Image (cartoon, rainbow, N blue to C red; front, top):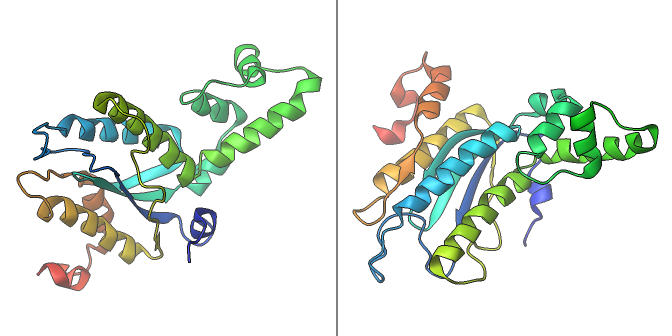
Length: 225
């Protein structure tokens, strides 16, 4: 039975989630398409650049990522403390980096305040945007929509570029999070063939694994030995 992502993503239970998203219509994210002969490695750079931009705007940490030929993996952490600590000015400033601002919010940024008759509307806007800045759904929406528009323009076509649903399993424990990070790394590294390039950010993985430095590697990941 299909479960709403709203019910799957519950930051009060766990802030960590492993995201998998796939292309449709045999589209490519990177590597060589054996049918058309085209190389799509530049699309990998699109995704990586957008991920980096969004991680600076949203209150969501990117713990690991891998871009494969027709899908990508993300391990994300919702930073609840950062989200709750944002001031109204910070919330509006972050949101305006991604979307055109509401006139009331623009007035607040330009003038430092708004009239009494607009304060309630501004408060509602700020509360909504603050919620979205900690939302994985909005993070994925901002990432996927831009990549889809660029890819469709390049392919000279319209329609869906991504599958309708994103696979989003919860990552419940620190150890499980580290295992998912290594899984994402291994998918990218060992799952690649000459025509299926992978790309992975491993610095964060190695940093996160310091939490287990008092344990032998065989105790952490016996499957790798």
